[in-house]
Length: 485
Image (cartoon, rainbow, N blue to C red; front, side, top):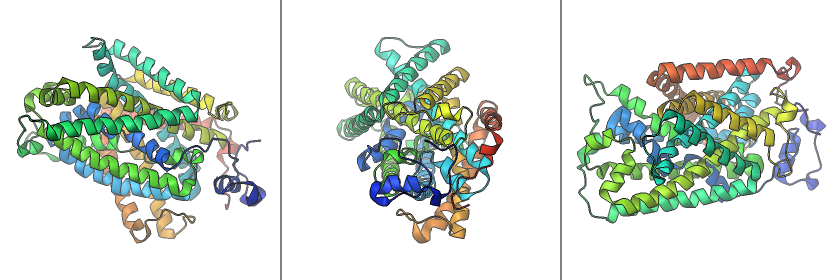
C-alpha cells in the first residue's frame, strides 16, 4: 500500500539485507521502490544532456538571442551560461545528492523548510516549466519538419495543429515504458553528438569566407542610445532556456542506480559539456555569418548561416540529427516533469492523488503522464510564439531553482543537509550565495523581457497553483515530509 503522506522513519525501517541501498533509502523515508531502476551513469548523463540538447536547441532558438542582442548574444551565452552551470547547476546538484528522490526541487524544499506551501509551489512551477518546455521545443521544430515536405510560412493555426501532433507522439513514447524512453534518450544523445561533430567539423575544415572577429561584438542595431545592458540581459534568455532543468537527473533518481552519487555527477558532467559545446558552436556560427543584416532578417538564422557557408548537405544532415535529438529532448523533459507530479501525488499533495499516482504494468505513472501532456497542449493553445514559450519556461525554472538554492543556502549555513556523497565542501556557501543572487537577476530580466505575456503568464501559473493547492484536503496539506520532524 502506498502512503498518502510520509510516516516517521522508525515506523518503516526494513532489514537492509532485503533491499539494495537505493531501495533501503526510499524505505527509510516511507516510500517503496515502485519505479524501474534502469539508469546508469551514461543514461543519467544522457537524461540531463538530452534535456539540454545544446546544439539542437541553439539551432532552433538562437533566433531569440539574435532578436535581443544580435551576434553579440554570444557573450550573453558565455556569461549567462557560466552562472547557470557553475553556480545554479552545482548548487542544485549538491541538493539532489542529499535528496535523490523523484520530485527533485519539490522534495528538497519540503525537507529543508516547514513552509509546505512553498515546496508545493516550487514543484508546481517545475511541472509547468517542463510541460511548457516540451511545447516550446515542439513549436521550434515545426517549421523545419514542415520544410521537409515543402511547406513554409505556416499559419498560427497550422503550427498549433502540428505542435499538438508532435506532443501526442512524445507522450506515446513515454507511455510505452522507461526502457523505451531510455532507448530514445540514448539515441538522442548519439544524434546530438553526431550533429555537433558534423557541423563543427564542417565549420572548421570547409573553406568559406569567415566573418571578422569583430562580428562577435556586433549588436545588429538592437542597442539604442548606447544602453546595451538591457538587451544583453534579455539575450541571457538563450542560456537560461538552453542550460536548465538542473534536477532532471534528480527527478529520475528513483530510476537511477546509486542515485545519490550518479544523479548529481551525471547532471554536472552534462551541464559542463553543454556549456563548452555551446560556446564553440555559437562562436563558429557567428564567424560563419555571411551578412549580419540578412541573418537578422531570417526566421531560421542558423539554417541560413550553415547553408550559406558549408552547403545544403551539411545543413540537412545536421537538421535531421537535431530533430531526432529534440524529439528525445521532449521525451526526457516530459518524463522528468511527470515524475514531479507523480511524486506530489504519492505524498497526497495533489487533488485526485490516488488516481494521479497510479502506476501501470510498465511501471509508468500513466495518469500523471496524460495530465502533463494535456498541460503541454494547453500551453500550445495559449501561445504559438517561441519567444513567449521559451521565456515562460525559463522563468518558471528560474523561480523554482531560486527558491531551492535560497533554502539550500540556509541549510548550508545551518549545516542541516543530511550526509551526501556529492559535496562542494568549502565552496558551498559561495556557490549557493551567487546562485541565489543570479536567480533574482534572471527572474527580473525574464519578466521585463515581455511583462504582459511572460509576466502575466507566470502570475496566472502561480495563482492557478494556489487554487489547485486549496483542493488538497487540509489534513494532507498540514503534514510535513521531514520524517525527523
